Image (cartoon, rainbow, N blue to C red; front, side):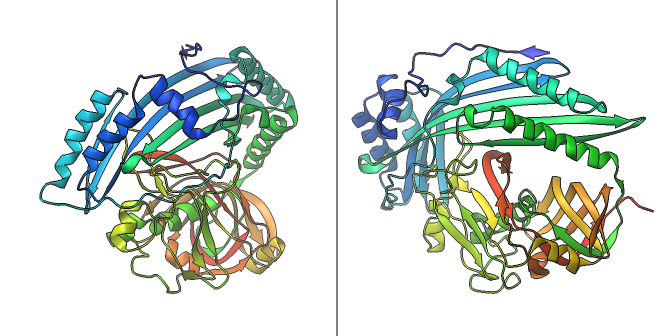
Length: 499
């Protein structure tokens, strides 16, 4: 067991719900990045101006982040961590080249040294720094720090209560793991001429996983919720009871599962979390960098049909309190509702500033980075398919025989051709247009662009996942949302274990 619990706040003001005061994000982040460190905003701006002189684009990204995670396993606290990090990243962009320097030292001297480094990217060039993005006064989530809203002892007591409830729910429960995690990220983006943008981003997650057994057979189930909010939204008994009940339901379903069939067959995808397949197999292929480099299966297809009629896919970073939402992206561009595919026609790519400029397109608010130590790139926010007109039951009836996939685990995708392999953690046989036995070991194999053309019916029950998604790309992870309605595809390859 490893426990690190330095639950002592440092010298910054951490507001709670009772102490919260109305301040702009700029004012509150000024407290963090200038008043607290002794830096002068005007001197910092002057150093950014010098570093980016002659560059095509760039910014100073300031970040302060607090995070915690507590895991309760086997009737005790297995792991408890708290971390505080801070730093800056300074970027200069010249053509396709990027100069990037970062440091955990928040000082004018460190920014000056970083400026000397990134200026090297401008050798032999003299550009004009691109205009700053438009501003926004929109608030999508609270700026309260969730970590200070609940005592550590109360968090442990909550996880212990979850553990006890799960074990009492069914005698077949053999193992329970419950975890609570949260973070509070404050960022400020400084551009030439003194343009500054800021955002304060809370993020919490509650997760329950358990193992059930019957004789020698054991199966697992898990469920979680989260979003850009404080813990109060998720720790009410009716809420965490629902997470335990759902994890138990999944595990018991799997306990009764039979080997999955294999072969080419109709597939119906359930609503919500199965949108992770859409995210991976389609979404990444619509990010601007892959299309600028023409390494995506969707390159040069703007305006062309890439999916069946009725398929509309959007990336929307403007949804209140959602895990994947951002008021502004990590370049300072306001997030947006971006229609990517409309009625089967490819309409747009997701763009950061550099790739948008090089492609002659507009930034879409999708320039994201994991932290100050990383350069931004085009990333998804909340990516989902809009409703169709079919009743979900129609999709199952139309399939007649096949697989109904409700939940997914891991998967792999090749962006260059869209080929994917995804494992199902909950799936059922479809027999004579009705749901049959649950199946174990099913994998879905296909090609993203091709799969979109095989959509025959789209349900009217679109919904987002429950707020647990994390997307990895080029070594960087960011929180995201996924979603879709029930969807009937006329055929996919199913890999199974039945003989």
